[in-house]
Image (cartoon, rainbow, N blue to C red; front, side, top):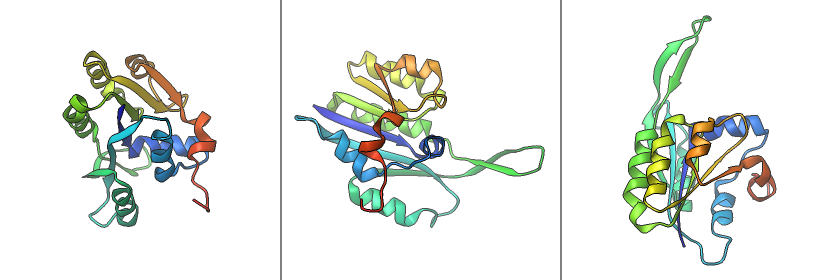
Length: 168
């Protein structure tokens, strides 16, 4: 079975904060391919950047693990009442393009995101015959997105398999 993995770095940052632990990208890849007969066809990581050097060591490490890293500059989208700036880099279109581009050669896709904007993508991937697994955590993913997937996996249940530790 060919598997594709799409990690929305922005969404997962907040999921990990809520969980109180961070997952290790290397352990994620190991977990994804631990089942007999599973081959990783594609692995994508999406993240916004403050500047070209932002997160460089982390992005280089992801690339060396086999992730295709997609980035976009952060942009200001508004201010709150305290006049703090908010930055955002919406990579939903990139996620959709990449997953549609590889859909013909994969059997299953794991989408690690909580973005409601991906609902239609998940529906279309299912229509094309792919098994769609949505991975996030309770309270961080809209019901519509969960309903668009074949299965929802709460990352809190995968702490033993995915948690980043000093030794790994």
